[in-house]
Structure formats: structure tokens, C-alpha cells
Amino acid sequence: MLTKEEVVELLNPVKDPFLHITLQESGGIKEVTIKEEKKHVSVKVGISKTNTGEQMQLQQEIVGILKRNGATTVGLRFEKLPDEVIREYQAAVEQEQESTLMGGNSNTKFIAVASGKGGVGKSTVTVNLAMALMRLGKKVGVIDADIYGFSVPDMMGIENRPVVRGKKIIPVERFGVKVISMGFFVEDNSPIIWRGPMLGKMINSFFSEVEWGDLDYLLLDLPPGTGDIAMDVHELLPSCKEIIVTTPHPTAAFVAARAGQMAMKTEHEILGVIENMSYFVSKKTGEKEHVFGQGGGKKLAEVLETKVLGQLQLQQPYMDEEEFAPSVYQEDHPNGKEFHKIAAKVIAKIEG
Image: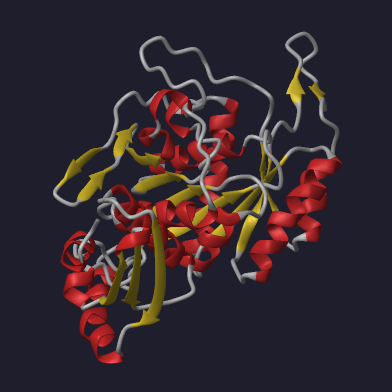
């Protein structure tokens, strides 16, 4: 059975989720009680913030450590660390945050690309808007924040994986755009089953643990709807602006309005609406055929009190045997030209 000394030794390296220092450094292990006959361990732990999702994760981590080392049952109590301890280490945390993308010294503009439902081309818009901004001379990064439906690496033809340098993850660069995606960290396209707090921690890591360098724009491909990830982004990035993607179908526009209204509630500025799959140009007649109906983008823009930034036709990128990137439109492609116009409007709105 574990001794008190062994419990302390096992838990000393565990980190406070907010101060990013070990429990040994913070003096966070307050009390240890052992009941040998029942193989029960009770621990009182001091952390900087209690009753949070991070506390739940920490609880699971500590219970796992102790059970793997001989405890049958574990009892945990949490209390807040003394204010003087928190103040001592908080300054270092804030200084570190200042040097990251979320710090006050960053000039990076954040744009979240959202939709009410899946399958409307939100990731395609994210990738090609990033490409268009890059072609206009901007330094651009993309976070594939669609944790369950990550697709940006495949769309851009990315085969490499990020490398770790020191304590930082180096994003993969393709066509001059820096990319980080959950897809880089999942083997064999395995499904992901995570709880909300774990998802939030991963998104936070994409900002704080990735060496983005000097970026003008960072685009976030959000999961469809208004779930945990969207909420985390709203909380992490109060200055983030949003683009809402829909198709011309009225139902798609109605659903997309939910994502837009969430942005409005959190005081995120909506840059506009992009209507994807707006029409198909017949090769025989040269006329536009509205396969998925008409008016969805305009109707959505009216509901959200914004404008339609652009309308994209149903057409594949040109075949290119030299550079495999199945969803990237070339600069001279009709949709490539439309994305160029959209990017110019976005720059004018944000920087004008």
C-alpha cells in the first residue's frame, strides 16, 4: 500500500492547470490520509481556481496516478491557494500570455469561419480565404478547430506533420499558409470521443503552445453549430470577428442564423455571409442553374444585419498533377477570383 511520502512524491510533478507550475512549487498538496485496510487514499489539493472544467481534468489525472500505483479508492478535496501564492506566480503567467497570440501585444487579427450545419463548405471557405489573403501579401495561419470533422490538411494536400522545437509546436506550412489541425495528432483517422473541458484545453493549446510567429491573420475553422468549441473560442478571443457560411437553400440559411446570432450575443463582429454552392454554370448553355435554390445568403445577411461577401459557384479546382491540393482554387479559377474579391473586402473592413 502507498505511504504518505509516496503519495506526495507521485503528485509533486502534477501541474496547476492555471499557474502552470507543479504542486510541489505551489505547495498544493495540503493533506494526505491513508486507510491501509481499505487501500483508500484521501488528498486535499490547493489550486488557483476551483470549480472549473480544468479542476475536473486534474481530478481525473490525480485519481489515475494513485490508482495505477496501488490505491483502490481515492478521495479528493480541492481548495483555493492563498492569494499571495497566486499573485507570486500569476505575473509570470500573464507575461507569458502577452508573448502569445492572445496577448495584448499581438497584432494578429482573428477570423472565425462558422456555419449552422455541416456540409455547406465551411472548411473550403476557410482554406481558400486563407490562400486569398496570402496572395494579397498577408501572413496567414489556419487553426482547424473542427475537432471531430478535421479536414483542412487533406484539403490542402498536407502530408507532413508538425515538429516540436523546445516547448513549442511548429505548424506545418503549405503554399505559404501555416496550419495546425487536430488531424495531425490522430492516428489512422480514428474517431475522437472527448468531453468539453478536454476540447477546450486542446483549442487553448493551439494558441499558446504553437510557434505561429508574426501573423497578420489567423483563421479558425469552427465545428458546425454552437457547441463547446464555439463557446471556448468566444471566451478566449473576445476580439474575434466572424464569417458565416451557408448555401442558397432557405433551410441552411435558417440554421446558419443560429451561429450568427451566437456571435452577436458574444459581441463578435460579423464581417459578412459567404454563400457557397450558389449556382452551377452549364457548359452547354453557359447559363446559371440554381441547383440548391436561391436567396439563402441574402436572407441570412438580412437577419444578421450584415452583407453577402461573395457567392461561390459549384465547380472543382483545376486538375494539377504537380501540386496535389484537392480543395484549393487556383488564382485564375472563377472561384479563386471570387475569393480574391472576398479577401479584399475582409481586409478593407478590418484594416480600413
